[in-house]
Length: 356
Image (tube, rainbow, N blue to C red):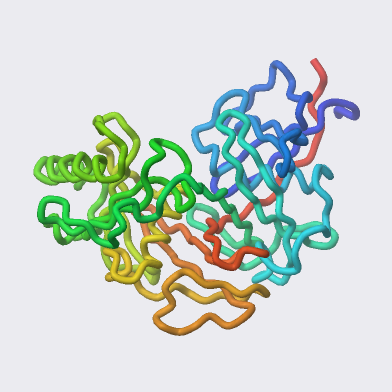
């Protein structure tokens, strides 16, 4: 028998993950689903914030589910459609966007999700992301600025860490979001005797490399103002850099808590993109110029090979990692110099669950 009156649920593919999105106060107590994370979204009482987002059962990829929170807010009328800019998230796909300010209730972190504002619905577009077949309309996730953290905490674009040139990005705010992302130590892989194209498993089996990386992390932690950096601390993250090999702008291997990651997180990508935009940094020395894409907003910031961006263009740096790529775009509506992660989202199922 069909459920004709129950709890409304919208299942959304958000980036590479799926979530079951509910209005605040409507999540069934007995909700349980395989491979789908419950996400609760409701209007926020916080000034300057549109909606609050919670993950009652926990979520391995909270950042990945934020795009869906923005889509849900628009689809359920928690923010007004047509109130956004004429350029932005989906502008490169022929659409404007609506900025949705989303606060993660557990941490207080606020992001702006630029959701395509498509008349009549639909999320078709030409943006591709790793791990998802086909293309869809572009969604941008812009993290809030962190005024209490410095982009270059030492005041130098390149620091000497025991004979190893490194660019230190961010600091002073342990394990918290900063304007550029998270504190990251960027080093050329070749300086440490590897190519930067190895698999994570191959790098982790290199005891010499692991010892060298930990020594760099401890030195960098002191310079970043993070105090005594223990092995189980998440920051600073380490980034091994190499020239791109798959048409992107830069190739990376991220090391967090001694483990080489299969991909790169959103906040880490923002830090790497910020470093690539700094002339003379370790990242800038080996990155290729960022791609220029059509948007109806001026954009500056990422390295463009000395060619100025035309009005109505944005720069996109494609960061290659072991399992694919992640794009970071400079230029969002009303903030032409801001960096945002590029992703996509698409509603998959809109239905009712029985009230138990």
